[in-house]
Length: 321
Ligand SMILES: Nc1ncnc2c1ncn2[C@@H]1O[C@H](COP(=O)(O)OP(=O)(O)OP(=O)(O)O)[C@@H](O)[C@H]1O
Ligand SMILES: [Mg+2]
Image 1 (tube, protein in one colour):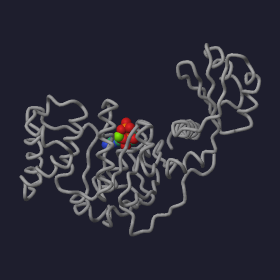
Image 2 (cartoon, protein in one colour):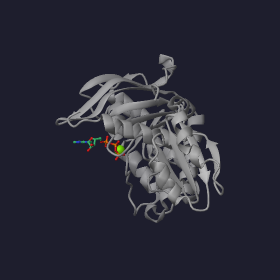
Image 3 (cartoon, helix red, strand yellow):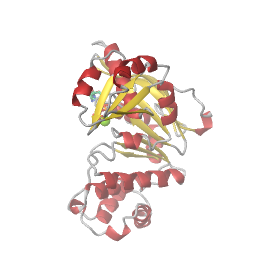
Image 4 (cartoon, helix red, strand yellow):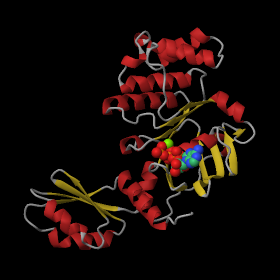
């Protein structure tokens, strides 16, 4: 696979986040390893990676909540080591498993947050946040009775009260149903259109596809950085679909072929992928003319790219790294 870090093309003044060599160790374990990345002002940046890969730790270093052991950089032009207080004033951070009070209404929850942070113009800020996220009509509903999607929207409203320029959203849609996730993403894009920069971590591929740019991290190392199109192109992946009556036996046989790196089942069809075009073509050749099978060359998906990156990094990973 080619180098998956696309060349940096963001002028310094347009970088909402610009960090170099960030590292964090816990005991003997390096959980973030020399992370260098940039987020462009006004973009929606997706942060992906398996569980425990260092996404939350990286986000916390970028907003000055956690001090790196090495490296540094700027967020919104402020130094992450020395100007953490200024960063906090202009960043909205929605933590993983963000919790609000179930027995308060949406309005009361937002008002409570505004009070805790001693914000001025409390009533005005709460009204504006309710309005901005389409929550005005539900303002007097108890938070406990809201569906997952509305709870997340309320949490986002709480992060918007101080009118931040940058939102750091850590898995904001985990466990939320598809319709609510889609609505939440409409909000993310609407905020970006107003000039707010959004860095969002996610495990969902459909969400990754909705980002302007993506970073993929595994075992603390940034393995890929670029637009979804750049990452698919740079992967050089080949993919095929085959459809048939009973593809179970075919899947079993194809999995044994060299050159077939991954076989994924979708009902009556299989999705095959490989980083070697000619090896994949040779591997499937014996079945190409078989009656009852329909073959189509397909475009690689981000999921193919990320799963490949993850398996490679696992191979390279040695204990004590
Ligand atoms: N305070 C801490 N002390 C010790 N180890 C920690 C601490 N915080 C995080 N870790 C470890 O660092 C690694 C990275 O954790 P992190 O929470 O950043 O991953 P993540 O990518 O956000 O994972 P997830 O997708 O599950 O949220 C994990 O192995 C985690 O156990
Ligand atoms: Mg996390």
